[in-house]
Amino acid sequence: MLILPTDKGFNHPLGSEITPREAYAGRRDMLRLMAGGAAGAALAGWAARDAWAQTARPHKLAALPGAKSNVAGAVVMDKITDYKDASSYNNFYEFGTDKGDPVKNAHTLKISPWTVEIEGLVKKPGKYTLEDLVKLSAQEERVYRLRCVEGWSMVIPWVGYSLSELIKRVEPLGNAKYVEFLTLADPKTMPFVGSAVLDWPYAEGLRMDEAMHPLTLLSFGMYGEVLPNQNGAPVRLVVPWKYGFKSAKSIVKIRFTEKQPATAWNKAARQEYGFYSNVNPNVDHPRWSQATERRIGEDGLFAKKRKTLMFNGYEAQVGQLYAGMDLKANY
Image 1 (cartoon, rainbow, N blue to C red):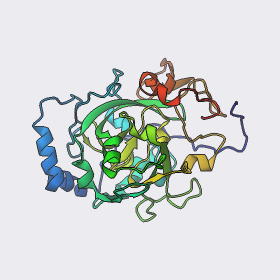
Image 2 (image 1 turned 180 degrees about the vertical axis):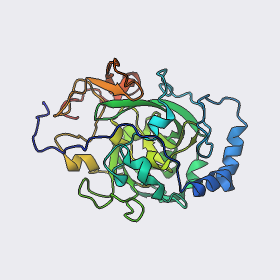
Image 3 (image 1 turned 90 degrees about the vertical axis):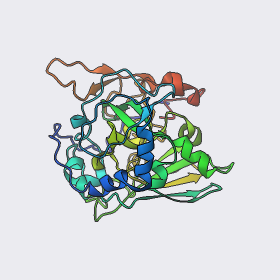
Image 4 (image 1 turned 90 degrees about the horizontal axis):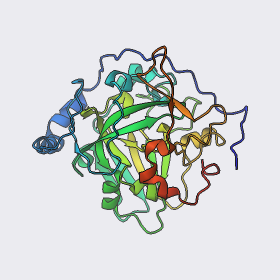
């Protein structure tokens, strides 16, 4: 079944040109958190390892090193996007609809203390502090492609561990078929929460087998440092074979459900943003092609667009999850 074009779809605001990276305020809490206490002890232990990935740190925020990952597909060989671009050209609608808004506005986000609540169909519901989550499993560096549904892409070295490590700890019940992720929605620190752009809080979801896949990352950092606010600090999801909006930022709740959860962009424009939203060059957005992409940082006068890869280049790792599915109907 083809996805029919619609003249009533959501109109994305135009992104600005990539803006210079501003000095980040409001990071002292996170620096103290990652430098001391339980999280600091965990980092000290990791620092003693001898198998580190070698992404150069930008030396902007607290260090968060990650060991080399043995997960198949965890490190792509593409040129890594410059940190300045990756941290200043963002979609994070809680802080504005322009690409340069998050880096300008996200300094208001308070990330300490931070708690993530686990609820729903699990044997062990509860609340996890950021310190709890950071030390739950060894941190790894994963160099993933990031493909936005808008037709641009980046390559980012994330730091975190497979979400499955957390899922196994909370022991989902047999009837838990989906995992829902909720982003913080605090109008006091997130100036665009309450706007008519989306239904708040921002919600995303995965099928259980997608959530359990080893490439699905619970991330606390990028480029060897803790996450900048505008990139989803202090903890976010990264699902590299799906369009970027599926990777929920600044997560405060993870809920296990039997029924497919409603998700933010699917509620905003159902004909344009499906629940699965796998990267697929053969299924166009109703208003633009998905066959090619613009790699951020390769924007010179003669730069050519790249051909978009099926499942963003992770078909060998995740294609079996969708065996027999109609990928046009289940877009």
